[in-house]
Length: 205
Image 1: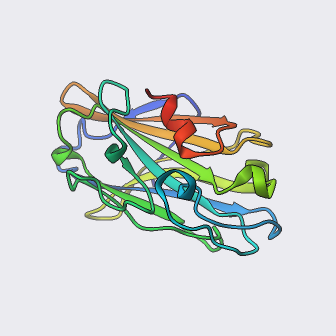
Image 2: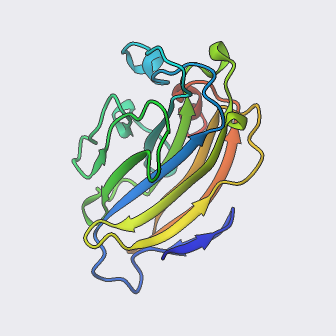
């Protein structure tokens, strides 16, 4: 069982765990109700079509930061770009509903191979067309981010996002960042009213 963090806490991932290389970052959530619609929140920014349905479609993405900034659009991994250009980050693909147990979307990271120019990975979850569909994270429950060892499945850390996120449309869930030669995880848990990934990216430019 991993260590449960509270908002704002940080923990070493690789220090004292020399065998840790490839990790998986699982993000999960459940809809409070089945009202509303679904789609891909990045379609307006990166192209692609929306999808119809009766569910709230939350989508996870990773911002790869250089000196705490997004330098290029290619430094974003999401359901429309499942692999980073450097090949060290892979997205499991889009989950349209959030129904069911376990992780809804999973991002695999090979820590030892992440190019040195990247100092931080930011994990974000958005709702597709939140304003148009009148949806927000007050309609989502049981949201969490967890990190586990890809080799043996052992959970290293878990952060349950328990704040009141009503009327907010983006969750900045957590960060994995370099600390010297090691990697750490920070439980962020900040909600924002950003309605597109482009809005989130601007916070890091």
